[in-house]
Image 1 (cartoon, each protein chain N blue to C red):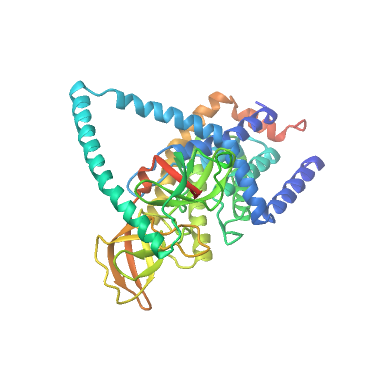
Image 2: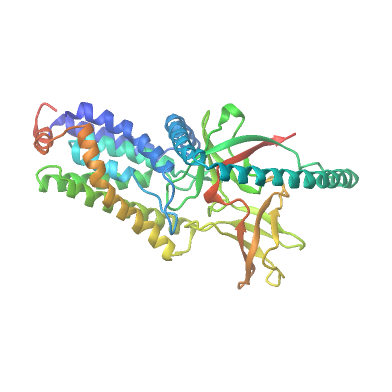
Length: 183
Length: 265
């Protein structure tokens, strides 16, 4: 499937995944939530060529950033700079990894999803600590980082298979689309 | 790399930098736009979730239904009796408030709302409700249940709003402890666990577990006074002040229906 068709489908799936992850109830023991956005992001940047992948990453960053936006005393506590930088860096890393493995692979998607989730949650926590002060690391904090990341690792193959059925895209097609001069 | 690709990357980087420079007002407008986009998805998802939950509820045996009916009948009688007692108390209260010249603050205009979902982020504690600017809901309006305070509206689109819960570290509420002159500031924790911390109390405060805590209603604040916030679980003195751990009266994990205070009657 060409990026011209795949990209709009993935862009529509961003708000859908946001709404879905809010609807899924939190899990015990520390009220952890399943994170679908990093899993979708990994699929998108692995399946798309560089330029559409960067555009997709920017859209993911804006939606992800706005979903956690808090205005305190007229100032945005958590602006869009962090998610934009974060998702663009991961786009470049995953594109390079995709080239190394010569195309998109489910293992790479699963591992990437887990790593993006763990770095996203840990990064958010560190920024909050820097802004609000204190460094209250406890078992709850660790569980809230580790469990959603492990869940991303587990659900990534399922989402991969589902999306591949929805948007049939062979590894060869990905490689062609990244090298083809017509795109 | 082709020139078109380089131009596209430069354009994307420029858009990224422009987005990073947006002020709080613009970001809030963008957030309202995002809420408007996800509103139909959240509402449909909530409807499906409710109907799925309803299937289990409908499958009750006749015995269960009969016992439920008896329980509700008993509860109804009890509530009627309590209501009669409260009516007298309300009259007394109104009279005393008039005598003291205080503004009547116990009557609010309430907009009922259903909770569509809990925020999936790890470090923020918020919910989405199915009411928005179309229903008179606006940013900074308090949200309550019949049990007590829930939080305040932080973003609103035409028919969806986001509510920051009292269990979030950023939701600070001026509060007073029942039966004492102690006042403090309540807030949640960074990884919200369902508890509140009431800080800036006196080091020598004599607080006992089970004491009720209400909003203090400071002038210019968001929350009116007298709304139940929680009950004291424990108290400990710190270097400069005292801090109490509170159990919120409205359990944030099981919220289904809430009310937005849109103003006074």
